[in-house]
Length: 180
Image 1 (cartoon, helix red, strand yellow):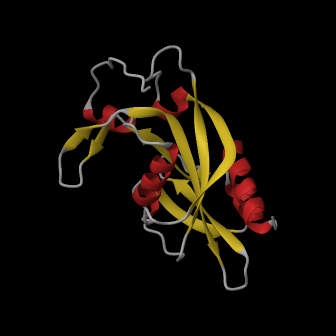
Image 2 (cartoon, rainbow, N blue to C red):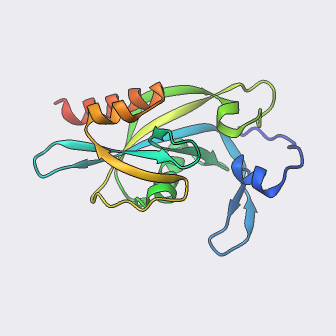
């Protein structure tokens, strides 16, 4: 059951940052309820030689390297949010194969939305992790990221700041490279 709260009056920029407001593709703004969870997605590509590389992204606002990330909107599931974030942040089509990972991070709610958006009793939210298979290496960055790079597991882990990102990338690599 979704949690609904009466939110303080915020300016448009604050509401965009908190995920409460979104821009419609036909212009104008629409209200969106930000769900109390985060998704983390690592695009991967299998080269002609059979090796895998992973895309890591540099956030424009902080310079931190991470996977694609964002929060659920409205009544989205984690999988639906992952598909939407892949499209919005990297131009990856919604039909791309997603792999749900077991890695689930727990992150401070305030570090995601800057406040206790869902009320004083929700201090942490889950971060669900996925891998997404890319058919090509050319990604279309949103304004959220300044650059991206394709990296081996070792290179990618070296770029990433957050342990939840490193754990998810490591699990994805093991799922792709370890025979069942």
